[in-house]
Length: 126
Image (cartoon, helix red, strand yellow):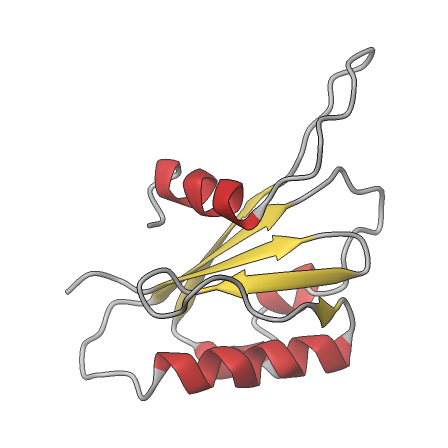
């Protein structure tokens, strides 16, 4: 059984999600706060359905759209630490792919959801 992948594209102040093979395109934009994380959890749960016996863990692939400064997006810590409400999606394994800009280099344009899905696929999470 192929593991299900939840792709989350983080921007500054908001994020979107997609479940390749289960959703057409990206979710609506959610605010980068506790309420947005609760809405994401509801959105994802309604599309993932009830887990089957012995199903592989959900693969959560978090991709930064733009470079972030500390402290970074709100939703990262609840995902990383499997805190409420996102812990409802367990079991899951999360990977994080941020935009790194080398000193003296120009900031690349913001990543799209298509690019996020490509990054996740190449990283072996899809």
